[in-house]
Length: 130
Image (tube, rainbow, N blue to C red; front, side):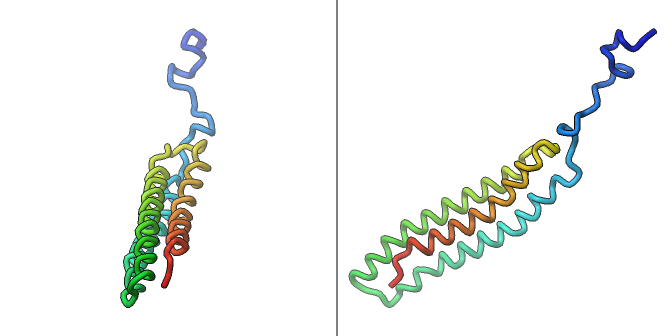
């Protein structure tokens, strides 16, 4: 008997995975490095953002009003940026561990800490310092 009646596969097994569908051997490395970098950076950004109101402790009148209004907006931007970074970090772990998704996984892993930096820079720029 020939193997042709079995669909051309050896012994009826599933076809061999193409290289694009093969599992990536170190798919966890980029998300792990991103996690180790992004989470501490996010906590440091929150820490310094939380200390920012102390910069205007001695302010009063119009300067204090300007600072408070700008800080509220900047604090919201910082939180949204950090939430986006967290979503990107989770997405880098959630991407399937196949070779064809390696670039996407690395891109998400690199974008997460970059988003923290951009959010913190935007926060610092939005605050109307006294």
